[in-house]
Amino acid sequence: MNLAAFTFTGLPTRVLFGEGKLESVRDEAARLGMVHPLVITGHHQSALGRGLADQLHGVHFDGARMHTPVDVTDQAMKLVATRALDGTIAIGGGSAIGLGKAIAFRSNLPQIAVPTTFAGSEMTNILGETARGEKITTRDAKILPETVIYDTALVATLPQGLAATSGMNAIAHAVEGLYAVDGNPIISLIAEEGIRAMASALPNGEMARGEALYGAWLCGTVLGSVSMALHHKLCHVLGGTFDLPHSDTHAVILPHAVAYNADAAPDAMMRIARALGGADAAQGLYDLAQSLGAPLSLREIGMVESGLDRAADLAVANPYPNPRSLE
Ligand code: NAD
Image (tube, rainbow, N blue to C red; front, top):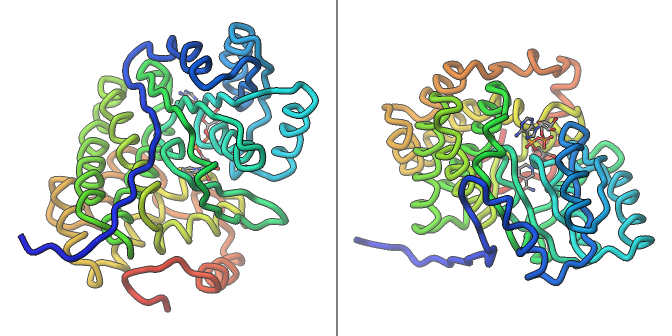
């Protein structure tokens, strides 16, 4: 094997995985020294958060919103300060987990993340925040949750449409890890297995949610370890400036971003296709999204044609490193 030199940085998150693992949250909170935690959810998961906050002598905040608007973080930070809270426990998709990360970045409080979608944010030291119509991404060690609890029972309730797009969101992390400017063979192994697990689980619906959650963990690990490229840049612009729904946007953009990069990243394309069990990476991703009933066009998810030029300008103004140069 002829290996090029590389750098690998492992991220130190403690992970608990399995059905019913949410039961461990009290012990994990104690392990991190939390006595009065802030329990964070979105509106839809309010009842779950309230119950947990009561059980843990904490305070519940159910205002988490997509793309982590800074004004929502400011509200939650006031609660943390006035109630002398000593940690965060975020239960939900990337929106709840994003708010937990935003608080940890500002306060350095310990965090537990309990994901209920496949977005993968819990495994990264990346925070995407929105202010004045733009999404800004920050990487910092304080942002990475100390503990992640993957309870497979929590993803059983995911509606099929959200499972499909959230799963495509996870696959996007692994895809871009395979051609990342700072990629390495260890992360490529994790990425390929993440795509394989996710693509094998998603068509099997509720029967395979556990395997999908395992895939989401792997794909999130990839995103946390190496750089993002064109696909993520486009999704950040479309989410942050045009408020398009996060996972739908990933599902739409991914096959096209991969097709654009295909000639510039042949080894990554071979590995993506192999993980999907097909011959062509971009076509395989498109076929997977279509078979799952995911949206396939920006128009379907609310993008206005008049915004396309501005989106393209923003995407190339401050680009992420990408295998093919941007035109
Ligand atoms: P989300 O967290 O907004 O959840 C989408 C909807 O699904 C919400 O209404 C939520 O209440 C509902 N939901 C969540 N889990 C459910 C379940 N098990 N059953 C039924 N309904 C459920 O969306 P998302 O796609 O998970 O996360 C998107 C956000 O995460 C964006 O802000 C994105 O920027 C961020 N994100 C960040 C990173 C990172 O590394 N920084 C990675 C991925 C995503």
